[in-house]
Length: 226
Ligand code: CDP
Image (cartoon, rainbow, N blue to C red):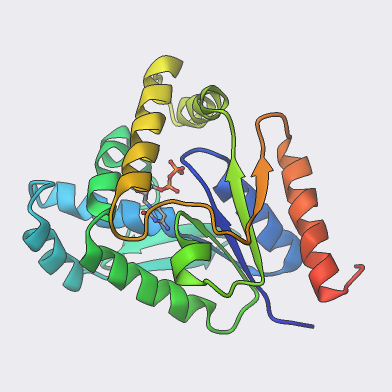
C-alpha cells in the first residue's frame, strides 16, 4: 500500500480538525493539527507578555521553544516545552492573537520543519492553512475545506459552549472573517487554495459525509476497497 500524505487546508472553523481526525482514525494514519502548534506558540508569547508586533523578540522566543504533538489514549495532546497546554490554546485570547504570531517567518520555518519531519514516512493527515501549498506541495491528496461564514460561526459557538464559554454568533462571525483576512493577506505562506486541491464546501454537509467523501478519494488512490 502506498504511504500517502493527505493535506487539508481551509479557513477558520471549517471543520478541518474534526474531519481530519476521523479520517486518520479510519485509515490508521497519524493526524496532525498544525493550527494547534501555532496556537501553542501564541500561548507562550502571551504568557511572556511580548507585544504582538515585536517580531524579533517573538522570532527569538520561537528558537527557544519546543512544540510537540503527542497521541495519548486516542487523543491529540499539545505540549509546549514539555507542558500539556491542550485546553489552554483554545481560549478566545489565544484565538485573537494567533494570526499575528503565525505571520512571522521564523515561527513558520520552525513549525514547517517539524511538520515535514512528522510526515516523512507518510500515512499522515495534516490540516492547516499551507499544507498543500507549502509544507507538502507534493501531497497525494489535497482538500480545500470551506463553508459559509455564518455556518462556521455557529459551529464554533457550539464548540465553545462545550467548554463553558458563551460568545454571540455575530461576534464569532466577525472574528472568523477577520482571522481569514489576516491569514490570506499575510506575506509568508498565506491561506490559499492549491491549484490541484479538491474543494469541499461543507455548509450543507454532515461530518460523516465529509469524512466519507475524503476516505473514498483516498481509497481510490490506494486501490484499496476495505
Ligand atoms: O480551528 P481554527 O479554524 O480556529 O484555527 P486553527 O486551525 O487552530 O488555526 C489557528 C491559526 O493558526 C490560524 O488562524 C492561522 O493564523 C494559523 N495557522 C497557520 O498559519 N498555518 C497553519 N498551517 C495552521 C494554522
